[in-house]
Length: 287
Image 1 (tube, rainbow, N blue to C red):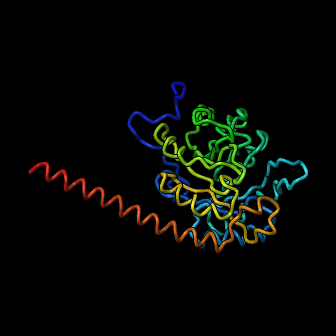
Image 2: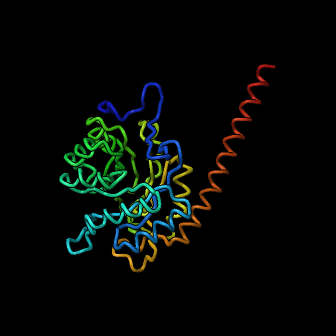
Image 3: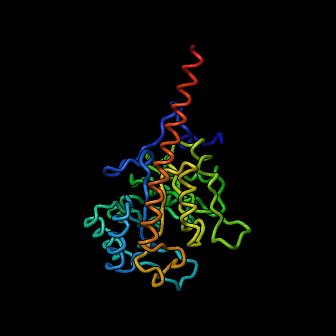
């Protein structure tokens, strides 16, 4: 990957840390949670408070929804952004929302803390450049057919505009498997982190599209080294206007967050044990 000039691992080994308020993305484990789409003020605020209480550190919600069918719900647009802004003011959670058009970047940036570039727009190079010029942190999803090299080259477009605040997000790739919505490629997490200094997140909601797979794939993503997760949560999934089959209830999300806490503590204990064992071996070699 010789063409990568800015996204490849820094010579000094430093990794990018993106600071949003008190959050340090790339250092803290960050969980972004919220509905696929902003449908109403009541729906978003109730969901926002629920995910915050469960331990989420950022709020997601689509004001603009690129859909396969032009007749499907396309989002509330500006009204949705204003609802997101109200949720941020009330809960204190930073906002992640998708931008789908170059003409919208500047004014969506007035509401969003992080601009999301979805899988359909990963290689929309004009949009990548505009997002780069905005200076806002960008959550860049992997295209459904994108290789690691192609994905990182998309990040280069943003980096080349002087914006180094990029979060890579694996959201599943298109394969021959039909049971899941996509095939969640968790091997890409350590692979991307070995090549690039950028933080890597995983979206198990779009990555699987199967409700019962979201929890185990979230846990597996953390073990694989993910710096964060993006999970869809809806106050009433059966009534959702988009992606109703892959959105967790607040209760299911809270259960997942408790398990993540236990997993993190277990991993920390394991790391401490390995470090202690290495220190003992070092002392024995000196004797």
